[in-house]
Length: 372
Picture 1: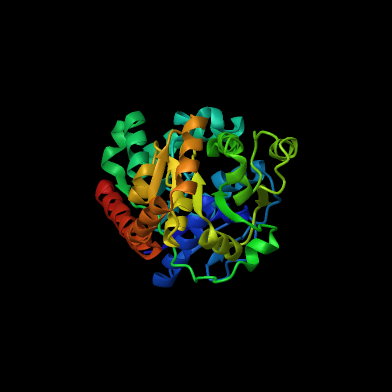
Picture 2: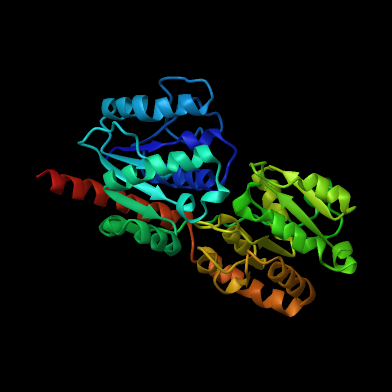
């Protein structure tokens, strides 16, 4: 079986979907050499992938769309691909009819939280996802929450759906605090990880932190990790106006090794998002045994299980109360930490890749039967 994969996401700084593609690509490649990753521009970081970049294009959304819908189908047909995997919501329009297809849907934010998206991104989802859902032979969903959302909107897709949770790596422990000190973090800290965009609810998290007592803020920093997104409040100005430059540390996008160290030495992860299809930072935090403060909606309770304190993401008071409980109740943190490792052990990239490979085979088989 010859597998083709859209790897165009690997050109951007790693978000959750990009990170999942890297890990699944690595595991799929280890177990199947007959897999080709297609990109519109060369990749330099992923030499363990069999990458096809026959036609080099300049950067830009327009060129990416032209490559995706017109050039990619040509190369797939030329290479005799049996099954094509679209890891991020969209299938090309001109795929050959002989091809089996697997589509991954991470979330339906464009329907459930449209106000948290850029207009162009929302428009692309609105244009592409219904078409892709109709033409996909099998659909991978990363959580039961996403499955529930999808069935509410597209009940006719039920026979195509399979939930395959994402995975997590077992991190190497970094025993010292050199990374934190390098970033100017001198106190114990709460960690936030995510792209700075409205869906991540960073505004309410920072406001909740600002309401903590002076004693708590002086003892515990809030460390914010993630690349700039869009539509955010002026975080730097808010920090300056409240004289919190020593309390709130904004690090931007950092390396995986540095991030692992920050996870390992955090008091807990704070992730009160408005919506998540899966929430990889929750799993990454649990893998190093730290508690999680997260939202009581979407996929977050499903993934966090009994290793998290749940709050209402729309209520600053609720988020503040959650922060105070975790900062002042060491027994609660110990209890949640004890559950974190057990929860994380339920998830692995190896199992995720194995289940996805089975789905590829099912897609090929069902498509062959359909053609008879």
